[in-house]
Image (cartoon, rainbow, N blue to C red):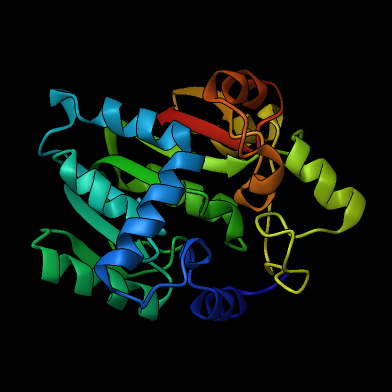
Length: 250
């Protein structure tokens, strides 16, 4: 198993979400193209952000773990959260922070390791982490950290890859990278997948857990599935989706 330094090095050289665009980094076109493509394919995220726009979440302290270049951070900020966003890689944080400063977003960005978060016990009302914790070597430690920093009654919104999914089946049969079938060299050093039993064990300290599967096909399969309307993708996602959308209450 790769250590945390290996994981950091990989993601420092593979800036997440940049496969959506070839525009100049940091330009208006760069951000626009990434957001348009990301949320068109990750339709379940737009559903979640609409939910977060409810007054229940306004001004609440939210920690985003694994923010990358801050694509979701901007949406979470617009939902009204008091947002702190952390990532393992310095270059991603620098890119995210520069955009926030240019566009006037009040987001606290920090470099931090999910396995050892620099926050007090019960400091956060909510935690959000989309597709990140399954890439850290000691995922149980990172989930325990989520539990630690959450207030009693607080909720964590976590996405972890699903074991029983079409994407994972194709990956195992043909040794194709999860997100980009075109790039055969792009193998992430740590990738965990989970079924419901594994999720229950991982989040056993939490008082309540709900899991919904979403996202049947990754962006790499867009040429084959781009025609597919949402009313078909949604039920397919619930059956054999790649994303376990987890809500865990402390």
